[in-house]
Length: 237
Image 1 (cartoon, one colour):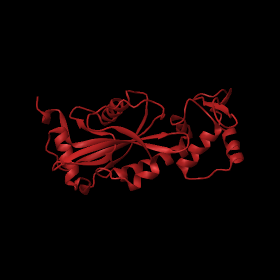
Image 2 (cartoon, rainbow, N blue to C red):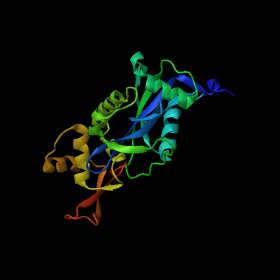
Image 3 (cartoon, rainbow, N blue to C red):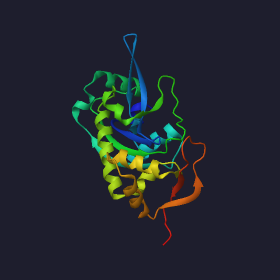
Image 4 (cartoon, rainbow, N blue to C red):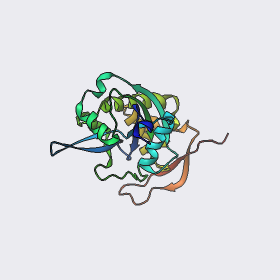
């Protein structure tokens, strides 16, 4: 069976994977190494893949995340397609893609997804020539990124901000299973680019029936231990 019978070289998926380390919003990127005239060039890219000819788009995005993390229960949402002909203008990107897939690549349209993951989950991505790492979202603007991935990340963040206005429970896809109100406020402010007053935020959270206080406190912290909370998807009436 030839590669042309396996892959569709004109459509790909890319995943903007967000995580939260307790104080900063992070994005997961693949380190890419390219050999150019016996010199190594390094940059970064979003996790992604050309789709298989018989593969649904959602299945392709899920495959990328499963290969990356080993997990299947990850929040995943398709948010936009990117098809500007100039997105493949850089010969380096096309050469890398053709060497990776052993296919002739022309114009390629990518369908982008947002994924939310608890950052303490182990990343299982393995490659001899690249690795996956978390990066501060604020650093992306100064990075060398493949294709139009900087724009995709920007649009992905805009999408998740809008989604959280409608479905605020999505915040808890990024938080640990047990969290403090300080962590919740930090994440809320980071995503919405705000600086909430502590007392006002506590009043806001008190109205969220799905945030449940636990009879547990933080352990092993250098400051005064704070109460822990959890997210309860189906609150008691």
